[in-house]
Length: 397
Length: 166
Image (cartoon, rainbow over all chains, first blue to last red):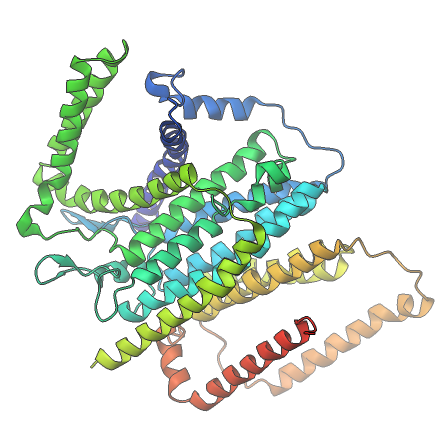
């Protein structure tokens, strides 16, 4: 019974945090892209547009829910449901931090630690194609169909290099459970080089990591591989005929997939919640330092405001940052939130990379996309896997 | 708990399988087949075959069925039209089906040893580690032969699909 209650609480917390992250990820994306393009981005709703996600949700929910007359109704309604379900389920096997021990109570920061976590994620990402493919087909619209076809072809093609790229670090770490994967990446070489997969001997998985990141962009249909929804060719691709919450479901699925893939990349290649540098050099104080600097910069800019409303918003943000910095200094709380900080920081960096790339790179042409996958990435992934396997076999006792 | 889950997933598998035959549209049938694959994966998981369950999900539900759907979408196959059937299958179909099921049942009852049934969770060798060890020790030759067979099939597919070179 205890297990059931704890699981329910954890599921509620993870679901709440994930959904909030998805909403604000979209706000961050709009802000970052705006600044890349020398605009200011959303700023009407709330201070610095912080309530924009809320306004978007209200807008999407109250919009008229149109079902075009020419669609295949069952599959038309099933498609967004499938897309969002398979996108959200995968978070259940992702571990966010170490085990928590409070008195006699201890639990892992993870919904469930299954033996085949990596394979589970691969399987779900394979099934996730159906949402997009069905949406394209059921809409009974040539643009949608083209979008759906492109996306299925693209996802099949990029799943291969992705799986191959994932297999290489698995060979070195020797397990399929995410928690054990991260534990196998703990420690340091020479006292300062972290033993993450990207640095781990006998063969640092840098090529594999790059291949994984590129394939991840394609799997999540993001720029520069967003051909399924290329707006200047296909209107909006597979979700052309979708409106209100059904459109929001696809939107949410895309962002949920981004978050999942970033988490998997962090766990497999960047050592999960293992810190960047060892305890002796003060890894414990880094989050406090970062938040304190952020807070002081905010307060300084609040004192010399560039815009009138900065006089209020920036000092408030500064005080909040200083408060967070202080929280990281409390020893009991720090043991719980330090792993969370490292995990969130790495995931955040990969997510920022997604947004950054969207702001800078143009879209691939379709034949370039396919050639890239089959003639460059796939052979490279196989070669990397081969070398890794050879070196692991030679160096293992 | 295990028996309840087994009944749920078995019911889904059988229901999807029947639906697969009954549907006239290829996409509906293909989706039902995906339902069968998914339910089977869950059943493997209940029996302790973790790796097989994941492989079922990745290979069958993920890769192979995506190709099915892809081809159906590309050919834009429409719903199958009902043809006028002759009288024989109408009257003899159901009784013959019952006879067939009866024969299968009696054979199974006779052939099966009268040992204990399956206990959920008793099988512990279904994880990737054990399967890998067995594949590379006891079954090394069949494993390698299969991989060569698959390689031959891939080469055959490429040769068949390639364009004529001038």
